[in-house]
Figure 1 (tube, helix red, strand yellow):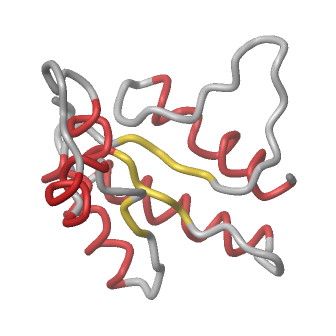
Figure 2: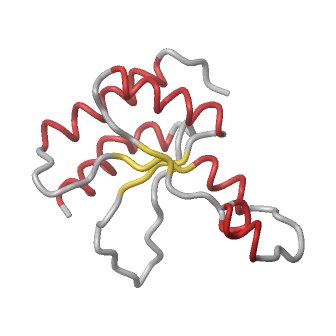
Length: 124
C-alpha cells in the first residue's frame, strides 16, 4: 500500500495541473493497491511516455485491450452500441511498476522520470 500511496502523492501535482489523471477511489470504498496507473492525454502521449521510461530502464505497460478489439473478441464476440469510452480510455491507461520489493527510491525514480517527461512537453 505504501508504494501506491507514494505514487499518488508524488504525481499529484501533475494531476492537479491536468497533465495526467490518477486512480479514483470512490467515497466509502477501499482498494487493495494491486496496481497503480495513470491516464495520459491519448495513445500518442502514452506511447511516447512508455519509450521515455524504457530509456531509463523503467518498464511501464499499457493496461489492457478492450475485449471487442482482442482477436477472440473479434472472432467470437459482438459489440452493441457505440464505443464512446472503452477504446479511448484503454488507450490512455499506463500501468506503473508495482511489485513486492519496490523501494521508495524506485517509486521516486519513476515519478521523477515522469515529471521530466511532462516538463519537456508543452501543456495541451
